[in-house]
Image 1 (cartoon, one colour):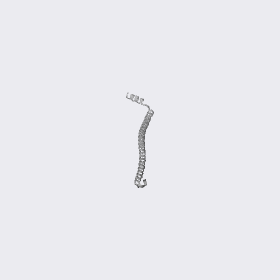
Image 2 (spheres, one colour):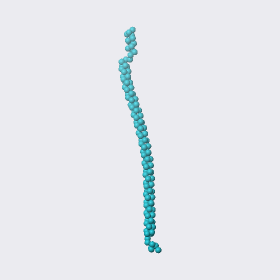
Image 3 (cartoon, rainbow, N blue to C red):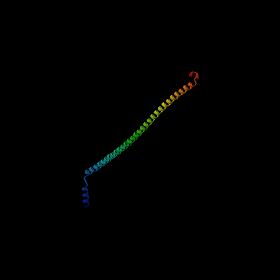
Image 4 (cartoon, helix red, strand yellow):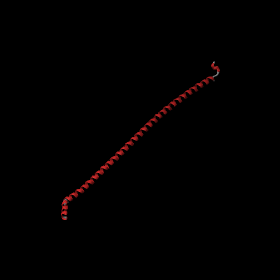
Length: 128
């Protein structure tokens, strides 16, 4: 019986050429699995890279928007300063005109006073 079971066992095994083919396919499958793993890894790497690119792009966009907002604030501040400077220049010009006008008036008043004094100091004989 032992011989029969050994013969039964050996008959259930595939022939060596088939077993070799199965082994080769297994190795091939292992290579295919490794290739698949590498491809999956590279897909994963690409996904991470794309994620990183999106993150960098988002941060750059936000930084650009912050810079634009800062530039707009600076522009508004510069415009306010320019308007204030223009008002000061107009005020200074007006004050200068008033000062010159006051000087002219004072000069005329002084001139009138001088004339009046000189008339008062004339001798009486000329007045008659």
